[in-house]
Image 1 (cartoon, rainbow, N blue to C red):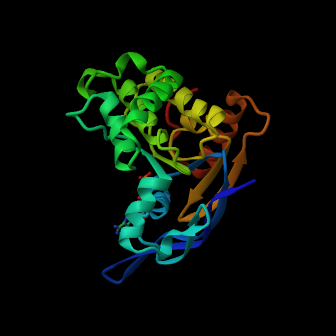
Image 2 (cartoon, rainbow, N blue to C red):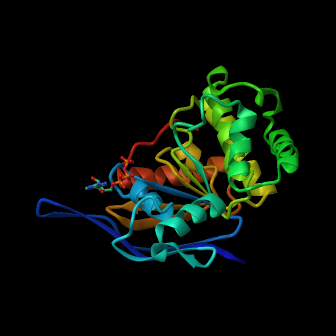
Length: 255
Ligand SMILES: Nc1ncnc2c1ncn2[C@@H]1O[C@H](COP(=O)(O)OP(=O)(O)OP(=O)(O)O)[C@@H](O)[C@H]1O
């Protein structure tokens, strides 16, 4: 199996007026191609800091992060910009679609930036739209779509360039439970059928129950790990809830 992400002894410390916050404290883990990994933990446990280091938005204090064998902690700014475009797909809580472009053009832009041949763009968009069931809304502008529809377009935009790794930060945070369910089905489909490798940060146990493996963070460290294995999603959800209550965290919406 191919290792897509390797986090090696990562540390991120913040110094503020004499106090030191160890937001990420000696974390190591790997993500293999086709995995769907969730990162959970109470507020302040270091999830966003970890994700920001992996997405190269933030610089690590020490340690290394390898994506597809490339050490991103070592790259210069121009190489980083290219790395983000070519290797990563992003899905945020706030959808982040461009309001002045239709769904189709939002997706097309990701391909155009990568230098895709114009003749191939429509075909690629139509294929992913069909897979995610968003063909009907492609010509709409974001403000004409529901939140769930916008997030599925964002999902299409994240995958259409075939990135090595999709990073999702609380992607269901702004969705009602029905839209969240539809979005998570779409993400699951990308994982199952396109073998997309996904790393998702969430505090919501229902959302996390869609992952195949979950790392739980506490005080900047990995505190526990759960693997779904042959469990049904309901069984996995119950196991997640047990760890969440150990951590004293909020459970998010019910199953
Ligand atoms: N820029 C910063 N300067 C100083 N401390 C910071 C900074 N960013 C984060 N921290 C601290 O690092 C720790 C981890 O924060 P982080 O945002 O990664 O947690 P989180 O698990 O994502 O929380 P939430 O679920 O609330 O978003 C917290 O104690 C936070 O206060």
